[in-house]
Image 1: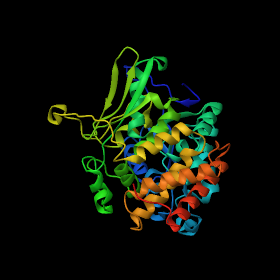
Image 2: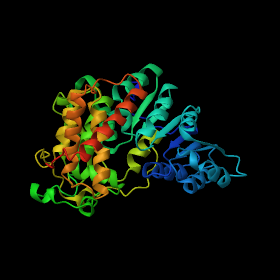
Image 3: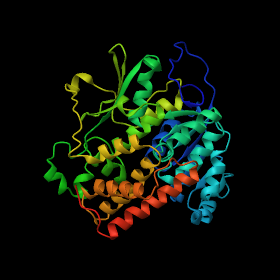
Length: 412
């Protein structure tokens, strides 16, 4: 798919040429993805001009970033921080805004490239606003595709927007797709590290603690994503995202556990060729690819030493030990708002686990029970708008909390 949806991979010209300065907005500038984006931009100031930066509620970090990159506008999602942000940027000439309206206004700012890295459902409306004005959007917000994937991609196509996948696995597939025609693709393969419990027995997993779940072997991430990696729900959400990004059916997407986290994604073509993208476990690699696309920029990451790696291993995921992945696949096959319910219930479950109120294996159990309850109530229809998707998300969270209050969930 070319302009109007997922970007078409293409090979940049080999001869050097003058590259125009690219104007950018960074939504979620104080988070890990945003920080990595800002790091890359600061290393190539001759190529990028930052217009807008946003954050959720970290006023001082946002003000510091806005000053450092010379942004024209700084937006805080939490309206309570407006006065503090205004004071922090007094005398700089940087425009200040807050709240949902401020985020949407910022998304409509006419820049060349938008990093959509706002975490959670709060990122859905501003990212959709950027898509609807036909922007090039580097997508790092999973809710856009998990909660409203069909709607999001339809609107991208209608507006002529370009979607660039930031997630390491989807970006790997995107790069590998450049090796052939879309019609010649047999399937894609996304990899999973397996998390900290890859070799644990089911009985051991049932007793897993929060401290153990947060010990990811390869990646440094926030607690929610790290727990999702331990349950393999993160991979299930990525399968749903890949379904929408690449317009693939469930039988055209495969997940393999790859503990070294070196091969991030592969594409198998009809002639039997398998093209893979390899890289260090550093999010600056896929971010740099999206930031300069269709060109390339220098990346400050450690280079792979393949000889030192020695072994690259792959195995099929065990769905009996990691039922969250199976639930995500079922939600994708069900379609409609099932993925929205799945994601909302998982967020409630992980928050409860982090707070110490439920055990590790109650996470997928709560997700399953919430999906069943939503189905009984007829809540799994496809959302027709962003507002409908957010309403379903809210209802699913209420269902999940009610199930916990009524002790209606037993751990796997």
